[in-house]
Image (cartoon, rainbow, N blue to C red; front, side):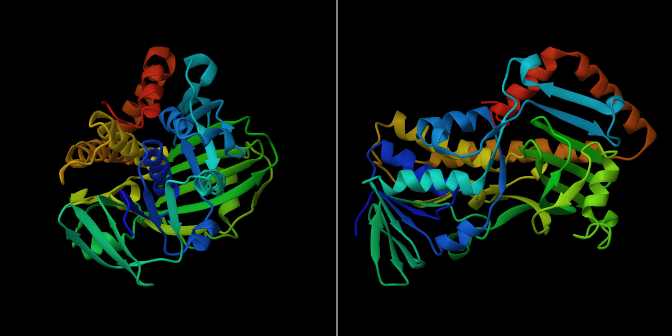
Length: 384
């Protein structure tokens, strides 16, 4: 089988890239190991204005169910009260603060579009066992003996990229010495469509409103603060109620609590021959700003920008070298920005506390600064 592009991985980034390339009349084959397993995972994503516009361009935004447009965001330092507040409002700043959507709804919208797309061939229960470059093509052989040739292959497999292992590409890591706890809660009092984040000494806690009485939670806990009993499924709601001064009334855990070590990374290279790495296959950042998916979408936007500039013709083995160079810089800077914020807010001494409180107080009074912050976040943390 011959095609223009092979995409390995059918997550949000893989399917979004496939639809983008199809709009440019490229023939795409998606290779997925087990799509049914991917559907069982339902994550909650924060979506920027840039990502929303991209989803509009590939014509899936209007089909994504249950998108929650944020009315605002409130950041707190150490205590959940107005004396430690930096707030962003859609009305005050004349900018959308962002959106919240569930992965199952985004994937459902993408899949519905892909199933109708004649340029895209979706191969489920399929795995690459051999990869070679021949002349101006990349050739793969799958476990069920399919041979597929393409001009380029994009790895969108996520953090556990098998192709990265095959090509012996290492990751450059940031170890945050922390764990992340991810779960959903229901709560009695309405959140009014506002996201919250509180920077505790133990680590940042993010509240993402799925609906008026549901939050998706991301609790980051430094290892030296971690207590198995305190952060267990039996006690996590007591912890949330305590740090929010019972602001949301009765709280109940409605999903399993998933725990994992927090690690940020960049692949040492985003390109090897005619194989390129995109999204979580290439990079990962601290979850405190909810930028993971948005940075992956920025990768696709850059890939498509290069494609447009070169009249859609893949005329050399270095066609996407510009993508590999630029996005490695962009994503490294994004990772460094978030690492800096996490480091600053985790410092625990009286001088640092005073400086941070003063800075937040001054920013809270400046609509100009708040507009700049929201604009930067809505541009997926890129300065370009």
